[in-house]
Image (cartoon, rainbow, N blue to C red; front, side, top):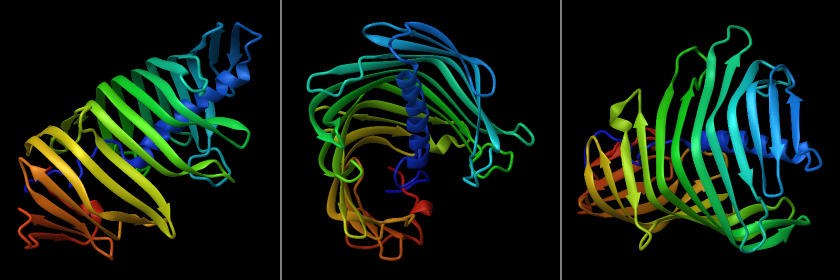
Length: 324
């Protein structure tokens, strides 16, 4: 193992993925508040622009035209940024009953967040995607139907720019393209008080290609097969979360191209509110061989060749480098 790419090829961080989910959730909320009794309506956005909605028996289409909302980005209770949305979003049936399916299509759906003080860009997300889903099983929690087994298929490009520290310089500039990228999510345990998943797994197959416009070394394409998908399982335990990773995939990047298989020798333990895992061992086999271990202090060690000798040590998981 060697090279300059991240120990885990870096696409969107978990926080960035959460931001995308929050954006889509806002649109879903707009669907709910629009109401089926008004098949066509033009809604004035809170701080300018419009949201044009068209509802049918099978779904709703939203068209945003400079739809502007003032938001609080730092949580101090004061609006400090403007979010402007343009483009369209179409959503079909959204029931989570067993066998139900839904689709979401975003056409040049752009969300742009800028500072109020100087209009500098904080974040811009552009979606040209189709997301389809099917519910294999469901349960009830808090009086609502929630899926416990759900298959999602994503196609199309996503573009993301971010100024993560608000200093006026773009720190993240990435393009992601999904091709039949299939995610099968299974939830086996809930916190019934909040309906939050406690144990879940996500298996992915298909192709995901990431282009980093700021650092070509971070660009890669990953393909996993349906016969042995790359699977991430999370289990909530006292003090944090245990994570296991398993499966095979092929990767093409600046520093490495080939096929790999990952297995978890010891679960990765991620403490609550800690930036890095503090335990766990992963083994990598295939066209490249190695062992990745997480230390009790939040660091990472890499044994290239899995011969029992530590070749590289990093004090933090965020700084770990290995060509995978």
